[in-house]
Length: 130
Length: 386
Image (tube, rainbow over all chains, first blue to last red; front, side, top):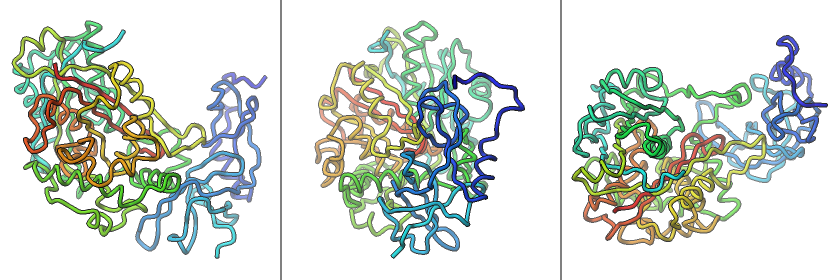
């Protein structure tokens, strides 16, 4: 039922545009497989696990923990690169916004920034920074 | 079909320059090709197979083959970053076994050190993940640093243990007149060097150098007609690991698969290996690959590399006796061919006398190309002296 068939060119959604527009309105979306019912990242038209089934958007809480992180210096501050494992059990490459980059660590709880994005992509912030 | 015993490495050449502002990259390729052909005792006119990466000047191999004047029956430009050349030896052995060519040439070269001022190294290698990743500007070093951070978290690996990998490389490089960094360094030197991307310091990172290398691979009967010591290809493996749709696991590399395939084909185990060339783009690369290849248990790499255990004549597993990418050479940001060349030197008994492994009969060369933390290609090659 959800097996992918080649659709007309005009019917193919631009996943990045749809994701970014939704994020700008405060909703963080993940692409899920209609057949195996798993989320994946980065979003694709065809599930990378089944490699045959179609996918759909579902809303995510946008919460997770830092799986790994690395901080380097750049002009005017710190450059943070992180993998965040979302509560949906998918790990995404992203960045964490913080004024204390030296305190970032694996296992730290983070959530999607509601008022800040990067070229249509999510940025994360530390929950309950102390 | 197996490649076991179907091909021999008969020529190997490492370009001596580490900075080449006045030579074109194409000329470096040709000088390496001529060096390997002279080492083998053949002419480039004898070459009928050519293997290169997709980083060579021109469209794939087309321009290089035309420039060098090669007349070929077979060519291949498999691209896997710095591990490409390990794949090329394997693919050359396959082509020879299949009768597609008799004498294969592999070349690589580059001038990132001379070109650094002229152009910032921008990655042209952007795939379908581009929209979703490029804005975060994750550099190659971040992609290795995050693996190190996770390894420390999961297994208690320390910065001191990683530093020992650089210390071993510096001991080896002190014997190599061509090495870019020849001073012996200490664990403290590594830890006191500037942090580049936490937890990796400057001395956890390989050098940026110009240069290149070349190899000649041929069938057994031709190898036996030449005058060089015989180095036989026993087994090879290749594998790609990515983010697996978001199932990211930074604790292991594709080396777990490429290594197993190579050991199975060769019919040997890690305990049989006398010398190993282990890709050292960063110190963490070495540590993870040693675990993934089975030289030690997963998570125990830190203890395995500490206290000089990788120094030839001192420790239990001599690696990268040329000084490796950390100290000797990392031409074009791609170290795989130098890994094979030093393994060939060890098997021939032609390594530096202070670092030559006694009765070196079985060697392994292994590489990781591309960013370890996102999408990388691993390749393993096992060779024996006959």
